[in-house]
Image: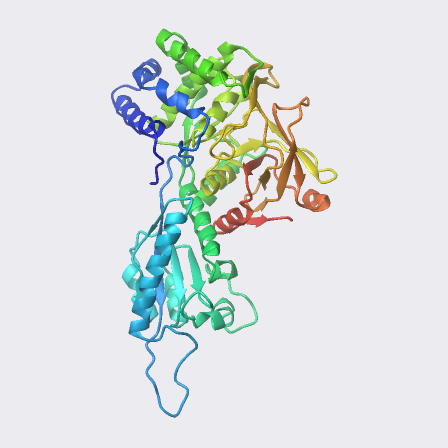
Length: 512
């Protein structure tokens, strides 16, 4: 797992170990609050420290590297006088294959070093026939990259049979010419017919020469690898906006592991925490540190901010107990023992983990996936009606470290509907390109346009408001709206999201 240097990560790891160990010997709500109080304060401050040129943040906490298995397909072709004897391509001798394997190793080593995600490359495996692929049937790789220098379709079929996602890399101008640049479409993708086959390797899995094209596909697979089977703590249990089947669909598509913590249990933890004078003193101290920068304007009470830090600490404890790096809240509009979780969720997202309100598993899988793809917070929000090329998005739980490095300016205000607690009116960066993911209720079709931030108004809506100029035709957006909640992230990650989601049977429509 790739780790960024810094006190926050060291404290995070140590505190997780202490918390889990203490849970094995206790577990009561009051014990939970008291047991971790002594190791907590320093880590909280790091969460809202302004990023600088020498400060790095691990924005993908809990992630594992993508392990890649490169496979070189080649042939050894003897010369036959008086007839055609060789195929197209330059990898048709043992010597050429050995040299090409070394070249692939060095190329992938450089790609891994330059990648903005964790990637581990296994030694290159050389094969001339499908049967030899069985040697890696027990590989621990998460993805296969097939370098199709020569060989035949039995190699492709054997690689597909491994059951791993894969990318086919072809060379035209980037080194030795590969035979399959000529024939992959007709012989494998269409299987000698006029129709594309329904194989796990498709037209979107083929790259010619371009290492950047390979890298973004691997980034997408990295995001998927870290989404599948992800554990998430669900305060009040999992749910779905207007559809009770959303949690089960999320389990089926993404194998999400949803751990329920009942609301009365959390409320008891909050009440115990309020009675801990040392703990509350730390919460107030961290609230003051959070409010100190000139980029932060307070428009609610200091006590509400302090209580948001108390809830943050309790959520940290619950995630540590269940070995999770994600949390979601159900029935949060009614508060938890009087605390609205809005600011708390934003703080967790800014720390490199994931926190979403409403426990809406229609949209949460898209947020987890995009978070690991882009290495930035993802913002769950409500959409509005597209009109004249623009949409407004709003919620009360916006993160501030939207670029993964720096904290955006913010007004700390109340939660809109209740007018209590602490929430964020983030001053999102004007001119910033956004990815917008809008999942459907059935987990079959996601809409994924991009847009540019044009303003952060103050309307009678949820607090963190962002107005977006869409990079898509308004009528096309209107015709293709499904579901309700959206996920936003800084940057354009539509191709990665579409590529990864397709691997679990979700079609992503990108509009431009």
